[in-house]
Image (cartoon, rainbow, N blue to C red):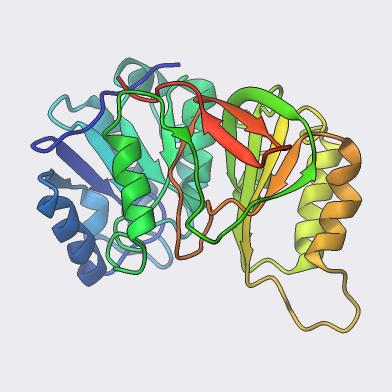
Amino acid sequence: MNKGRHLKAGDTIGLIAPGSAASKEAVKKGADLLERYGFNLVYGESLNHKRGYLAGSDDIRADDINRMFADDGIDGILCVRGGNGSGRLLDMIDYDLIRKHPKVFVGYSDITVFHIAFSQLANVITFHGPMVATDLSVDDSDYSLECFLRAITASEPIGLLKNPEGENLCSLVGGVAEGPVIGGNLALILSTIGTKYEIDTGGKIFFIEDIDEEVYRIDRMLNQLKLANKLQQCAGIVIGEFLDYESGLEDTLTLEEVIQDIIVPLGIPTIRGLKCGHGVHKMTIPIGARARLDANQCTLSILENALL
């Protein structure tokens, strides 16, 4: 994998909005925190625009990504939020450029499509982690900040990924597996199926998370992954947080029942409960780095350095 350089105080970080726009107040709060840690900031043009649920036109948002990867004066790139619209840009990205200029790139949710595309088409390690306006702008989780800073400033393997104290993982299927980490938001993963950006789960440690999806929709998405042979190809599966999925419908299944129906019978080492989603506490995970899942001990460890 191509790897960017780890960040340190004095480095310059570019801020972009490749999906939806973020409020200037929230961006400022997150930016202030980054500056307190000694980082210099450059603001993408997308932060100055709003078009419906998008942060400006597709051209503006795609240009921010290409320009910041090309600029040797920018050491890392952080997304200010997810939202909607990132998938529109996939055909507009210069993947050869990104391959030649690997950098820290961080986001989650709608940003999942970039993690998949950058990993598979540019062979670059990126980071599924907190964003400037939605996460770094609030003071709810020292855990999230510590995980984030540890990940982007380390030139050695991160090692064991630990949940916050008291937030335990559980094993659904025992066993041990190794492979590169891939995954992210379930709905966005599904949006790649049938395209040239389709997620490759073969031999990978595959993690999923989501929010505001009712159980029957999660059922549908997991079943589609199974029908597409994506679940069967995984070396291991990690189920992260699924938030706000209860609809109050009288005739429904529980999320636990859906997981037992679709994932557990595959017999692939599987754990559940990793804090890697939309919750208050957010783990930062290097996408593309080699990892070891021990579902007997309920541990996930990053074996490979994600940055130089």
